[in-house]
Image 1 (tube, rainbow, N blue to C red):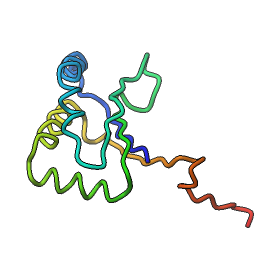
Image 2: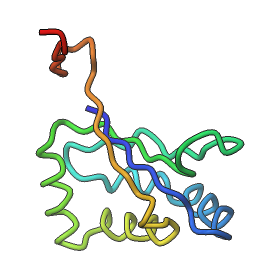
Image 3: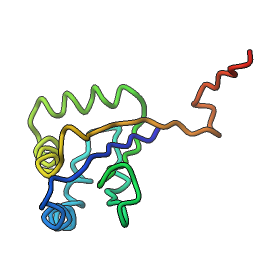
Length: 114
């Protein structure tokens, strides 16, 4: 499964966010909870997109969110780095979505004509 979190960056924080990601992305990737794999952190180009930044993770299933929550509750490195990322982001614009592989039989397709 692919989990995508998108948000806008606070005005005036674009360069600071980009510097922080450049300096800390490997550390953030290494701190991921069990069942989470950081794919990458992306910025939109020329404003083409619904949000300034997207963070993409491969996760094993919905239980991965419970694992992340328990990791956050312990206040470990993942939580500290994620909190720092969120300090650059506007919480009013944050959205998450989950996508499943269409060819792997993971998604259930309902025919509206049925």
